[in-house]
Length: 391
Image (cartoon, rainbow, N blue to C red):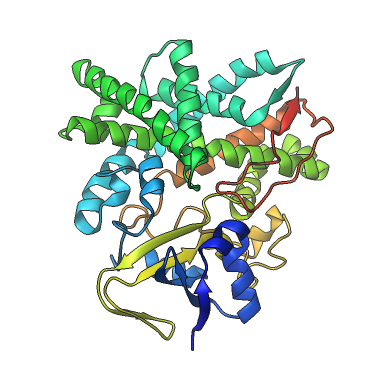
């Protein structure tokens, strides 16, 4: 029988953050429990099989499953992530065609060039790393998309996109600020779509051809914003390298080892912790019965720390992938990318993070004395506070 929590868990969810589900799965020695969030009954699940069940088979709809504040901060109405079934697959094919292997390579090359340019400014200085890497990623994705903008415009876009990401997991002023700034970014995206259509920009037009202008602008942001969001993974990679001088030296000798290192950063990092959906029809999983419109949430963070799959799950160990499959990492979803809501940018995320790890292992840098605690009560988590890096 599934444990039913006696009270509404909204306060505890926001107070405990990433550990909300983890604490209860461990307390009840179970992979599921029932509670209420915002007054609504919900079933919370963890486990690789549960994540696959959730993502595969068109069993769960996204519309109405996430708070409006989150939807408007990130995907927005009419975007690919708000669609379901065949309509979702047709729209998603645009993203996978843009983010194919050749597209990933082009984006990584643009990132490499922007990093090396920025590093010239960083050398001899102490910088706040997350805003700096956000700017590098913003410049890289615009260069890759062949969207030319002035430096002041790129700086403004970096601030706006970062605010959307930072405010997505909150209610109140931080969320309102991100949504307020998004208006300006959407105006920029509309102008960029118009210019792309007028000048036959191949990548942008592949993504947005025949879409309504406002929806096209939203989908353009759904390329730009997730690339900037990779900055949080890169910031967590800085912390991981700081904690492991052995790995830093090994990566200098064997740059190809950046892949398992990047995957372990993705597994352990507190990124976006959960995903929710509404059951489209009656179904069953692992003894649980779901009825149409049941609200279900899978805990990605708890799954990535589940002792059933990961030996010493809280230990950073890139060598684990000689015995534990990378396919168990569910930081960005599960299932076939083209057929499910799994993030279409996941291969690009891995490629960008790998290259960043290599660039960090090549460079001379250190962390000055500072608090490096990453609080898990905040969505999304801020890596190491301000994370000052001296180059």
